[in-house]
Figure 1: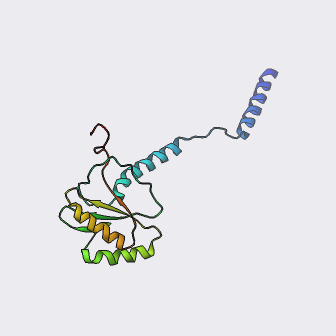
Figure 2: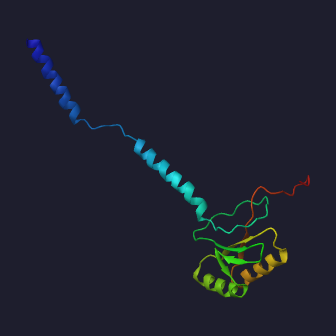
Figure 3: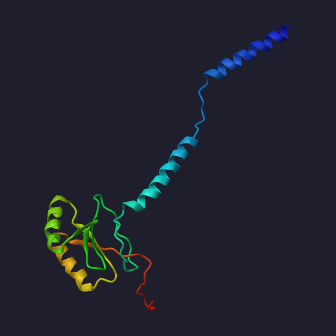
Length: 155
């Protein structure tokens, strides 16, 4: 009978000690679940953030330009001759005044020119001259990657 009391007493001491101990393990499952949901949201939303004008860009072997702090401006020339600033269609006569007003408010003089592959080079050169006249001296030509390269073998 005395042994019985001893066991009960020691068991109750153990349960009191374990109740006071802090838990040293971290459950990371909820954190991983939240991160996966955020990853899926960003994967779905990222393609929607680009300018959505359907044009056929020429393919080149050029490397992409590094991204900047401000949202980059984009001028688009479509195959049917339309000029778009971001996604807004502009008459050619309003392009330079609109760009000058934008250049006055921006710290960066970088602009991207997206031209359909069917647009003649003379039209692209005219728009590039207008961009330079409006104060944008850093013009990036947007192309699709994976195009032909000019190497020694002629490929």
